[in-house]
Image 1 (tube, helix red, strand yellow):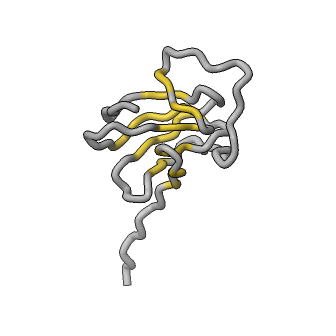
Image 2: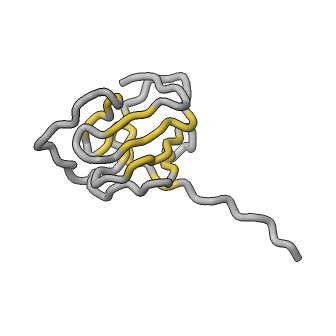
Length: 103
């Protein structure tokens, strides 16, 4: 568990996923990908590790992932096979806000 700052970059220990922190709080969180804790960009990826169920839905490049309370936000900069999660809570793709109609 650790506290993140906006702009921090992390990568998965079990797949190719890479993310950048967009919005964060002051509390410590456990950010996982594929069921394993995310590591710093300088760390080595585990050679034979694979994502474990239920964290195998994958990530999509360019998408923003948020928690259910919309407190934390991460931008996927490289896609992979593992799913992002805070602890055991899967993160979801942030939906675009609807624009007002121009009647």
